[in-house]
Length: 425
Ligand SMILES: *Cc1c(COP(=O)(O)O)cnc(C)c1O
Image 1 (cartoon, rainbow, N blue to C red):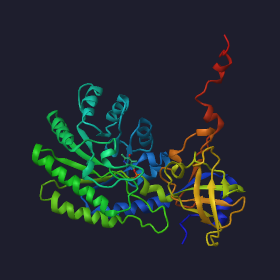
Image 2: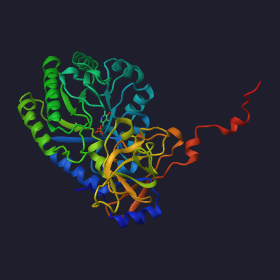
Image 3: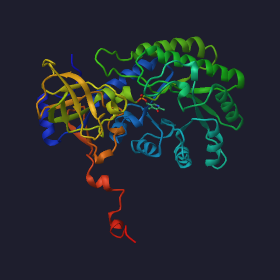
């Protein structure tokens, strides 16, 4: 069975007449339905919050839909904080999980009442100085469990090799210090996975976090009011992979909650996630047209999108399913590398992929591109990134980002000054 796409072949052919490829298409209904599933699974907790990882799909229209569904935003830069603000996400619905953070970004977050999630013990003093000698009422710390936590993959690596978070000893000292300095509310954060499909991984993470919470309470009387289990919930990019059963994850974590949190007197505790990928990933597609084919030692299909639009395959060999519009049920009797136009041999959306025979002009749909897709793009080689379209729940199409222009690409250069620039003495 081929992967879902919300438009029929004839609808798509109509659409590309108005909006030439390449473009991203996002499905509002898919995103909303999926969020209902997510929220419903975790409704067995006294409080559940999802802080959407803005970096996955930093578009204010999408953020507004997520806001309408009750989501907050997880940010790690000033522009991301500003995007949340523009979509009506503010105050404690913003989690500022940054690292190597400049002072002015902390100041902005503090001024807007965002939750500040610190990445290191030295950042307590840094933050204090930045804010003129005080600390916020609420502070969260990012915990790095190090070798306590097995796992990791190409994207995030092993926890003990990851640059993020505080060690166990540091985190205990950090809360004690903040408590002494009058901080009133505490959260505890960890993120040790990326694109993880094993549901037990998240249960295990909650277990480690719950134990640490109890230790913090017993040692220093620190009461954690919310735990943020991070992002990292994977999606089934490849055929045959299974999506993470969130009902299972929620129930298992609830069991641990009843066994550990309730008897310790730490109930009610808010359970938070800052997922990006599973929220929008499967509901975004990169739509592109075959414009060239060549046959050398391999057979190549060249498309009008490039790695500038979607880097994941080139950057970490990520798999994205590709379907050919109108040929969903055709026999896959060809083997192609599907390439973009960058002068980098890794600019391939698929390598040695079995696909139906592709003709010039065929429209290719690259699946699961709704998170870390357009956002990761870049302008290397003078490539201009494509625009974004939103399929509304009523079936209409709304452009939510235009394509880049050559003027955009040149915007940071001063051609006026170039006239007076003398290269000879
Ligand atoms: C990237 C990131 C996320 C989101 O990860 P997904 O895999 O998209 O769910 C969440 N939190 C932090 C701190 C991140 O860096």
